[in-house]
Image 1: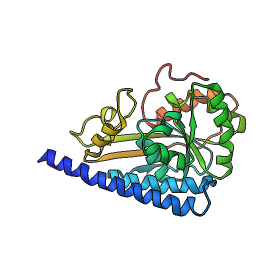
Image 2 (image 1 turned 45 degrees about the vertical axis):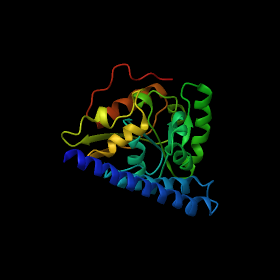
Image 3 (image 1 turned 180 degrees about the vertical axis):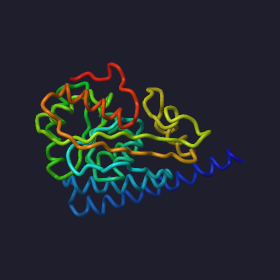
Image 4 (image 1 turned 90 degrees about the vertical axis):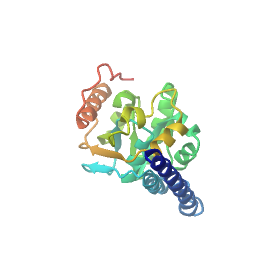
Length: 253
């Protein structure tokens, strides 16, 4: 009976997933594309928020927010899964900085491009500089720019924060599963090279409940030292999650 329920649960959520996807595509064309608002960062971010809420509805995931979401500046968070983007975006219009590989993902890559995501190849210094030049228009549009630097602190995206004095808000996202549904690091997290997106998502759709709690810290000034900023953000994100900072995780670029 348990296997039957899981199978039916997966079928129901797949149906809801494609319903949310179809609704999101239609909404994009009628609220962004047809009105000629493709060049509006704000319009695309607002569409992304409704799209994220729709996908979370399909997954049966209702995120909980602790603290106050930022209204401007930069949001820096830990990174667990592709669900992170949906959870963060469901609370407010955001523009994300994401690794370049995401742009090539089936379905999600296209949706990310529609949402105005800034894609970056972090191993290339020139690409970091290119994305740094694309960040100011996002913030000038009154939106929050979010990213998940490795170790929560080591990426070169910290450079424009210091140079421009942008306000930064740390955050920590935690997932929980029902007893018997496995461990978060195996079932929700998506980081192993051998993990394939399709089967991983299908398995996730079979879980009874996935709980997500997003905790926001206090907005703060970046200061003038990017190395100190990297170390401070790493420590504060870990503190929000009540976990010990990883030794050697902070490597300023």
